Structures are given as C-alpha cells and as structure tokens.
Amino acid sequence: MKEQTLDICLITISFDELERSAGDLAARSFRNHAIVPGAMPPVIVFATARERFYAGELWFWCAPRLFLLSSENRIIGSGCFKNSPHNGTVEIGCGIAESYRGRNFATRGIELLAAEGFSKPEVNTITAETAVWNLASQRVLEKASFYRTGSRVDPEDGSVITWQRERKT
Image (cartoon, rainbow, N blue to C red):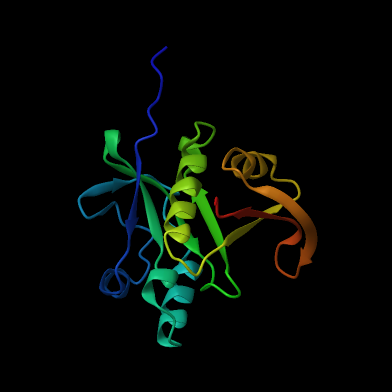
C-alpha cells in the first residue's frame, strides 16, 4: 500500500476574497483549487471573521485558513484562530471534510496552524476545545502535542474538553 504524503499547505483567505465570496459554501473551487464537499468552514466563521476585523482586530488573527492537499490540488478542510492573542494565548479550531478524515490531515493542519500562531512573538500558548464524545478530534490534538487542561460546559456545544500546547523554548 502506498503511503499517503501529508503535503498540506495553509491558504489564508484575504479580506477581499471573504467579502467577494460572502462565505459561499457551494463554491466548487477557490484560487483554482477544487473544494471537497464539507471542507469549507461554516458560514459563522466567515461572519465572525468579518465582525472581528471591523471591530479592529488584525486580519492575521481573523482570517480563515484553508487546508490544501497539494498532491490532489484540493481543499480538504479549514482552520482559524478563534480570537486574537490575550495574555499570550490564542485559541484555534479546525475541520476536515468527512472523506479525508482518519488519514492524519487534521493533525497536519493543526500543526501548521499552531506554527503560524507561534510565529508571532506575542503567542506563548495555543488552546483548543473538543466535544467530550469526539474521540477523533481528541486524538488529533494529542498527536499535535496538545495536552488536556480540563473541561467545561459550553452553552452551545455542551460538555467540552480543553486543551493547550506551549511554545517550545
């Protein structure tokens, strides 16, 4: 069996691209890359990015990122920073199209997103949350060197596990 390469790249959506697309989840391509069904972030991610930017946050922290599988020229998932850094900490989130799950693409996407966050000197810790029932997402974070820090009840998502990863010194 041929080993799958993890040639994932992050594509940062520009503010102009976000405004033009208005979060068109039915789009079949982006910058000449095919979009796999279920790979685009939910519409709320686009709306929140826009609101945060208009509220004065830097676009770097607002911008959704797309996970491009270079070998197939397909966008297979997405990720984002859920906030700008506060006291050295920023939260991330991601999703992978169902047809590409279970092949380490989410782990690689999270690693790239974390590397982008840690490229900024104001970030020392990156956090994430997973639903208590979502064992696959928990495993993704573990493989990406995150560790459990606790749990809480989210008004929308219910019980979640909190995770973090610190900058390597």
